[in-house]
Image (cartoon, rainbow, N blue to C red):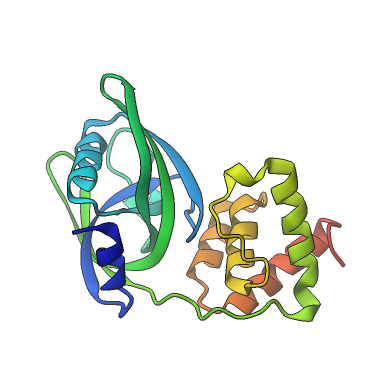
Length: 208
Protein backbone atom coordinates (compact mmCIF):
# COMPACT_ATOMS: atom_id res chain seq x y z
CA UNK A 1 0.00 0.00 0.00
CA UNK A 2 1.46 3.37 -0.99
CA UNK A 3 1.93 6.08 1.65
CA UNK A 4 -0.51 8.33 -0.22
CA UNK A 5 -3.20 5.65 -0.20
CA UNK A 6 -2.55 4.87 3.45
CA UNK A 7 -3.01 8.50 4.46
CA UNK A 8 -5.88 9.13 2.06
CA UNK A 9 -7.86 6.36 3.73
CA UNK A 10 -6.88 7.58 7.18
CA UNK A 11 -8.41 11.05 7.12
CA UNK A 12 -11.60 9.65 8.63
CA UNK A 13 -9.54 9.02 11.82
CA UNK A 14 -9.91 5.26 11.39
CA UNK A 15 -7.81 2.89 13.47
CA UNK A 16 -4.57 1.64 11.87
CA UNK A 17 -1.63 -0.47 13.02
CA UNK A 18 1.84 1.08 12.98
CA UNK A 19 5.28 0.47 14.43
CA UNK A 20 6.27 2.99 17.09
CA UNK A 21 9.68 4.67 17.36
CA UNK A 22 9.96 6.37 20.79
CA UNK A 23 12.42 9.29 20.67
CA UNK A 24 13.53 12.26 22.74
CA UNK A 25 11.88 14.56 20.24
CA UNK A 26 8.41 15.69 19.25
CA UNK A 27 7.60 15.33 15.55
CA UNK A 28 5.08 17.77 14.09
CA UNK A 29 3.13 17.42 10.83
CA UNK A 30 5.18 18.82 7.96
CA UNK A 31 8.49 18.66 9.85
CA UNK A 32 11.64 17.08 8.43
CA UNK A 33 13.25 14.61 10.84
CA UNK A 34 16.63 13.05 10.00
CA UNK A 35 17.27 9.78 11.81
CA UNK A 36 20.24 7.47 12.32
CA UNK A 37 18.89 3.95 12.81
CA UNK A 38 21.21 1.26 14.17
CA UNK A 39 19.30 -0.86 16.70
CA UNK A 40 18.20 -4.12 15.12
CA UNK A 41 14.50 -3.71 15.99
CA UNK A 42 14.37 -0.36 14.19
CA UNK A 43 16.46 -1.59 11.27
CA UNK A 44 13.85 -4.30 10.72
CA UNK A 45 11.08 -1.72 11.14
CA UNK A 46 12.74 0.50 8.52
CA UNK A 47 13.08 -2.38 6.07
CA UNK A 48 9.38 -3.22 6.47
CA UNK A 49 8.32 0.42 5.99
CA UNK A 50 10.45 0.69 2.84
CA UNK A 51 9.20 -2.63 1.44
CA UNK A 52 5.52 -1.90 2.12
CA UNK A 53 5.79 1.88 1.52
CA UNK A 54 4.11 2.75 4.83
CA UNK A 55 5.00 5.21 7.62
CA UNK A 56 5.95 4.48 11.21
CA UNK A 57 4.95 6.42 14.30
CA UNK A 58 7.21 8.77 16.24
CA UNK A 59 6.33 9.40 19.90
CA UNK A 60 8.08 11.40 22.58
CA UNK A 61 9.50 9.12 25.27
CA UNK A 62 7.39 9.12 28.41
CA UNK A 63 9.67 6.80 30.39
CA UNK A 64 13.00 5.27 29.48
CA UNK A 65 15.72 6.06 26.95
CA UNK A 66 16.17 5.96 23.17
CA UNK A 67 18.70 3.14 23.26
CA UNK A 68 18.55 -0.12 25.18
CA UNK A 69 15.46 -1.36 26.98
CA UNK A 70 12.22 -0.38 25.18
CA UNK A 71 10.92 3.04 26.24
CA UNK A 72 7.33 3.90 27.10
CA UNK A 73 5.89 6.30 24.48
CA UNK A 74 3.51 9.19 24.93
CA UNK A 75 -0.03 8.41 23.74
CA UNK A 76 -0.08 11.10 21.02
CA UNK A 77 2.50 11.06 18.25
CA UNK A 78 2.96 11.74 14.54
CA UNK A 79 3.38 9.46 11.55
CA UNK A 80 6.75 9.68 9.80
CA UNK A 81 7.10 8.88 6.10
CA UNK A 82 10.53 7.97 4.74
CA UNK A 83 11.56 10.44 2.02
CA UNK A 84 15.17 9.33 1.53
CA UNK A 85 17.45 6.65 2.89
CA UNK A 86 20.95 5.27 2.54
CA UNK A 87 23.16 2.72 4.26
CA UNK A 88 26.72 3.82 3.59
CA UNK A 89 27.87 1.76 6.56
CA UNK A 90 26.56 -1.78 7.00
CA UNK A 91 23.95 -1.95 9.74
CA UNK A 92 23.24 1.79 9.95
CA UNK A 93 20.33 3.43 8.15
CA UNK A 94 20.39 7.18 7.56
CA UNK A 95 16.84 8.38 7.00
CA UNK A 96 15.20 11.62 6.01
CA UNK A 97 11.61 11.46 7.20
CA UNK A 98 8.62 13.79 7.05
CA UNK A 99 5.94 14.18 9.71
CA UNK A 100 2.45 13.67 8.32
CA UNK A 101 -0.63 12.98 10.43
CA UNK A 102 -1.00 12.93 14.20
CA UNK A 103 -2.35 9.90 15.99
CA UNK A 104 -3.43 8.66 19.40
CA UNK A 105 -2.41 5.19 20.60
CA UNK A 106 -5.43 2.98 21.34
CA UNK A 107 -3.42 -0.01 22.55
CA UNK A 108 0.05 -1.41 22.00
CA UNK A 109 2.07 -4.58 22.29
CA UNK A 110 5.75 -5.33 22.33
CA UNK A 111 7.56 -7.98 20.29
CA UNK A 112 10.44 -10.03 21.72
CA UNK A 113 12.77 -7.72 19.82
CA UNK A 114 11.45 -4.76 21.82
CA UNK A 115 9.66 -3.20 18.85
CA UNK A 116 6.33 -1.65 19.80
CA UNK A 117 3.38 -2.16 17.48
CA UNK A 118 0.32 -0.06 18.21
CA UNK A 119 -3.25 0.32 17.09
CA UNK A 120 -3.62 4.05 16.57
CA UNK A 121 -6.52 6.37 15.90
CA UNK A 122 -5.52 9.06 13.42
CA UNK A 123 -6.31 12.61 14.50
CA UNK A 124 -8.14 14.66 11.90
CA UNK A 125 -6.10 17.41 10.27
CA UNK A 126 -6.87 20.92 11.47
CA UNK A 127 -8.93 22.98 9.06
CA UNK A 128 -6.75 25.51 7.23
CA UNK A 129 -7.36 29.00 8.56
CA UNK A 130 -5.68 32.37 8.33
CA UNK A 131 -3.33 33.81 10.93
CA UNK A 132 -5.22 36.27 13.18
CA UNK A 133 -3.98 39.86 12.99
CA UNK A 134 -3.03 39.79 16.68
CA UNK A 135 -0.64 36.89 16.01
CA UNK A 136 1.05 38.22 12.85
CA UNK A 137 4.24 38.65 14.88
CA UNK A 138 4.52 34.85 14.85
CA UNK A 139 4.73 34.93 11.05
CA UNK A 140 7.42 37.61 11.10
CA UNK A 141 9.54 35.61 13.55
CA UNK A 142 9.10 32.39 11.57
CA UNK A 143 10.12 34.07 8.30
CA UNK A 144 13.28 35.32 10.02
CA UNK A 145 14.03 31.83 11.36
CA UNK A 146 13.55 30.24 7.93
CA UNK A 147 15.84 32.85 6.41
CA UNK A 148 18.52 32.26 9.05
CA UNK A 149 18.37 28.44 9.02
CA UNK A 150 17.85 28.11 5.26
CA UNK A 151 14.79 26.96 3.33
CA UNK A 152 16.36 23.52 2.81
CA UNK A 153 15.62 22.71 6.46
CA UNK A 154 11.88 22.99 5.84
CA UNK A 155 9.58 20.98 3.61
CA UNK A 156 7.59 22.92 1.00
CA UNK A 157 5.08 24.32 0.39
CA UNK A 158 5.61 27.27 2.70
CA UNK A 159 2.23 28.39 4.03
CA UNK A 160 2.86 31.52 6.04
CA UNK A 161 -0.83 32.39 5.76
CA UNK A 162 -1.98 29.16 7.46
CA UNK A 163 -2.26 29.23 11.26
CA UNK A 164 -1.66 25.48 11.63
CA UNK A 165 1.47 25.45 9.46
CA UNK A 166 2.96 28.52 11.17
CA UNK A 167 2.22 27.06 14.60
CA UNK A 168 3.74 23.68 13.78
CA UNK A 169 6.90 25.24 12.37
CA UNK A 170 7.41 27.54 15.37
CA UNK A 171 6.75 24.69 17.80
CA UNK A 172 9.28 22.63 15.85
CA UNK A 173 12.18 25.12 15.91
CA UNK A 174 11.76 27.22 19.06
CA UNK A 175 13.74 26.23 22.21
CA UNK A 176 10.72 24.97 24.11
CA UNK A 177 10.82 22.17 26.67
CA UNK A 178 9.83 18.78 25.27
CA UNK A 179 6.86 18.49 27.62
CA UNK A 180 5.53 21.80 26.31
CA UNK A 181 6.13 20.74 22.69
CA UNK A 182 4.10 17.61 23.41
CA UNK A 183 1.21 19.73 24.68
CA UNK A 184 1.41 21.86 21.53
CA UNK A 185 1.27 18.71 19.41
CA UNK A 186 -1.82 17.52 21.26
CA UNK A 187 -3.73 20.79 20.83
CA UNK A 188 -6.45 20.56 18.17
CA UNK A 189 -7.02 24.30 17.71
CA UNK A 190 -4.37 25.99 15.56
CA UNK A 191 -5.26 29.48 16.80
CA UNK A 192 -4.88 28.52 20.45
CA UNK A 193 -1.49 26.99 19.57
CA UNK A 194 -0.46 30.28 17.97
CA UNK A 195 -1.61 32.24 21.01
CA UNK A 196 0.56 30.06 23.26
CA UNK A 197 3.55 30.49 20.95
CA UNK A 198 2.98 34.25 20.67
CA UNK A 199 3.03 34.48 24.47
CA UNK A 200 6.31 32.52 24.56
CA UNK A 201 7.87 34.83 21.95
CA UNK A 202 6.74 37.87 23.93
CA UNK A 203 8.29 36.46 27.11
CA UNK A 204 11.58 36.04 25.21
CA UNK A 205 11.41 39.63 23.94
CA UNK A 206 10.97 38.44 20.34
CA UNK A 207 7.45 39.76 19.83
CA UNK A 208 5.03 42.26 21.33
